[in-house]
Image 1: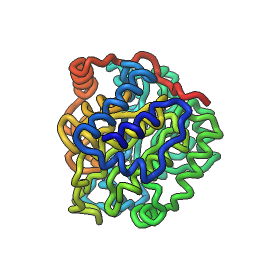
Image 2 (image 1 turned 135 degrees about the vertical axis):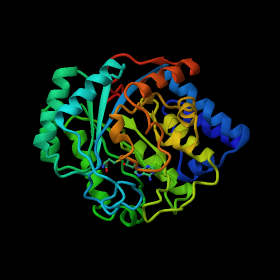
Image 3 (image 1 turned 180 degrees about the horizontal axis):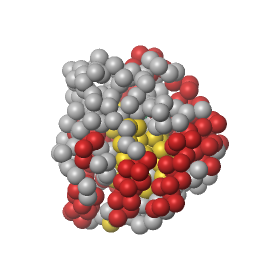
Image 4 (image 1 turned 180 degrees about the vertical axis):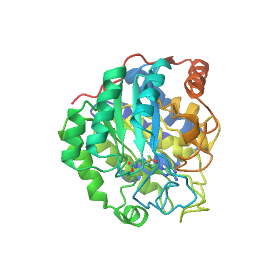
Length: 350
Ligand code: SAH
């Protein structure tokens, strides 16, 4: 406990040197009181740097068509069991209007890597959503060229979410065979240069991951100086080559990863990602009490939700309309947290 306390004190001291990967890996192993001390420190930093407000970002899963065949993902192009859909621009704009009614300050437009949605088509959608709702818009549509990203920024897109998935180059190329790791990282560099608020992150516990690798992922996410860091547990999907791969034996590693990200990134927006609710029923609530300050209610029209299952046990797939936005209100009230107002832009110092 003393060693852990000392390391936490270092993390809590402004300007102190960061921890090394082996030191972070040791923290990821912490159990009992030491583990609780990590959660408490993360809460303290979250309260101090981000306050009690939880920003709502409504996620619209607008297409499950994907040209990639990532081993971990349920909507990989090789999965024939998925009925594919694309929402129309009209449907996307109407859904964004609902998200606004339900109290979201941002809409996140997410899809597979779908070539139909060219930069021109997406730009038109972004313009319409911004024009008709005034909400902040985040895109999460995979790797795009710098020219396309520039066009989308010009159209008014505020933010972009692109996870690097893992910093292990070997693991990345094994599980994400259609595109090299370097392209994802280059895309993150381009986004920053173009003035986007940049979100990235990784899956926790991909098969073959060690605690040292998670520590490296935490350090890499920190070095990127992200405006938003989104991470969640890897959950094995039965219709993928990673079917049957187990969860991490020690579930607390998932939560400690988020807590350590908060300690290293006091002013980053950190969502309680949906996959935590697939891990366990109150998963997202736990994350909100261990460093997270953002919640992403699913606002996708009910008829599409079941078709966008990146992983099994995804919550809320049988819900309709305002259900998720209402549910989050109850959750936040029970946790004594407030709903954020306004767009909830980055508060990170450049
Ligand atoms: N096509 C976009 C959006 C991907 S979906 C892109 O490639 O950026 C959003 C995220 O879901 C992915 O980045 C990945 O981190 C996560 N994901 C995919 N399959 C998963 C699984 N089986 N378990 C947990 N998370 C998964």
